[in-house]
Length: 509
Image (cartoon, rainbow, N blue to C red):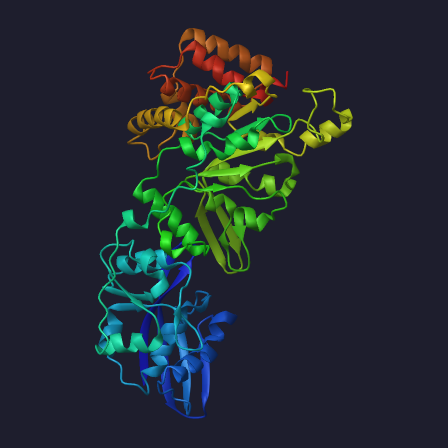
């Protein structure tokens, strides 16, 4: 007798339907799982046996059992196949209504006592099941809020194996779980952060405003204690709220990474990730034996902040070049190739030298060779990809002691929203939304210059020996500054300010 129970697996950020086929027949007692299972899937047979016994369900111990997870060409990983495997096996000795298996997908990890534990990746699984036309999806009770974000498919939360069998046979009816995205919104992680707390550093705050308006990458250079980290942590407070579609994109990534908390299943606050400089390549861009999203993908639609920028491994920093250019990261492993989104704002902070005081205080004790080696940890090609490069000098006593608050995050957020609204309207037919995403050809189309502006840029290009990438970066920044001012065309002052925000280009002179 063969029974097929539908389940779902994860490949990258996408789900795929798995046919859990159970063949139960007379023969030498055995329990085999085939279909490219990893060790956690192979161990399911022990969990299934104990869960059935402790749920007072009859397990066919005297039969030859073979479980096939199809399609066999895709690797099956994780404990989410426990529940469908158990249902397939129990169908041989416990009468279950098999008609429900044709329209329902099952997933869940089993505890030895028969309870059903939460699993990672529920959101992309349910999205795929809905796209494939399934009517119901049985999920662990603790995954109910995340699964219910998907409309158009009934979510059936179960607490244990016996309860699930009762639902299948109609002896334990379970109503589809309903919720609303509004009820799942969590409190903002940035509610106590505000730019009005930042004293001085008006040039850096202006650069932050421009970066946020056009979603440009930015790096700050300055001595310790100048407020670089303080300003970076407040950047999400001036970014517009995520749309529902953006929230779903981010939630999918966090779901696969196992970072979803059930009470706040929908991620509504823009991500802010700040990894330590000892991070590995795989943790930064994603990877592992079974590839998982890294920090660049966990920062999707948000901010990736790298404090002490030159202290990161050079190999790790060089890995950022492709995602910064393409807004996605492709990971190739023996088990397959996966692409994760990485549309993020990179924010870096660094000191001017190892001790931190070169050019700002006579306290600097670094030799010229030490300073050169320190700065050379960041390659030219990577620095060229960072749109805005600004200096954060020390703040004097008078500014620090001034009790008058600076411009608030709320005010800055309104300016950013207005500029991004202009960009959204301008690029509505282009397939992108922000000035930072302009290609070379689109830059020529949307960043037109007058005669005086072209003359200024020509002089800067020749004097500073700008690269083609720097040339286009300057035009994109100028376009964003013009949008903040509500200008249709880029003015001379817009272009001059954009040039002032490329410190690495000026330092070549």
